[in-house]
Amino acid sequence: MDRNIINKYKNEKDRLLISKVMDKIRFCETKNKIQTTDFLDEMEQKLLENFLKSQKISNYFFTGGFEEAERKILVIYPEKLTDIIRNINLNEYINCIRIQLPNEMQGEYTHKNYLGGLMKLGISREKIGDILVEENGADILVMSEMLKFLITNISSLTRFSKSRVEQIELQNLRKIEIKTQNIKITVASMRLDNIVSELARCSRGKANELLSQERVLLNHEIIEKSSKEVKENDIVTIRGKGRFVIKSIVGNSRKGRLFIEVEKFI
Image (cartoon, rainbow, N blue to C red; front, top):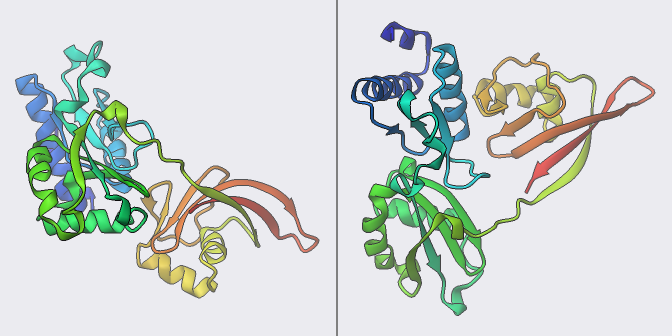
């Protein structure tokens, strides 16, 4: 594999990620051993998926420990394992910690509180997957090598000192309902800046600022081009504002504006 391909990526972080994955591919091919990354956000997953497709590599998959996971690891495997790879034991790579809050603290903590606690222990973000939060506690997906450390040290944090901390099997994860609401917006066209302006409730000028600041993702890719056309079923993420799915164009106004039905994640 030609390492010069890295030079096509402008962002230093992207180049580093691609370089690490190239090393893992080479190791997988020469040693015939499964290789994995740390947890990746959706933008990193999209970057790597595009890269792997461009290199005609198909012996890989992404998993976050459960089907609906947002943060996932990349698993690269030798071609000889293609027929059995889906049956591998994910617990070798991903484990889950359950924090059960005492009765008097239930309902107090959000995703931010759990993540902040782990970061206080010196855990880097890429070692942590999805955090599934309910009133009585949370299930936290982590890289397997972090399991023993976290089981031992989470209770040292004041906020969790009275909580029960234990490992659970991936099949026993909490079932968290994804909450959304349907909203309707009206736009002059399906240009991205028009869509962002309505979704973020800001002016077109401010929408273009968000684009230039790389705060807008379309289908998990950063887009800076304001004239980019948005289509039905596209996912628009505006950092600091939320995530939206463009469900359908439901009609036109007398002045030719478009009525759009949008699903907003809440």
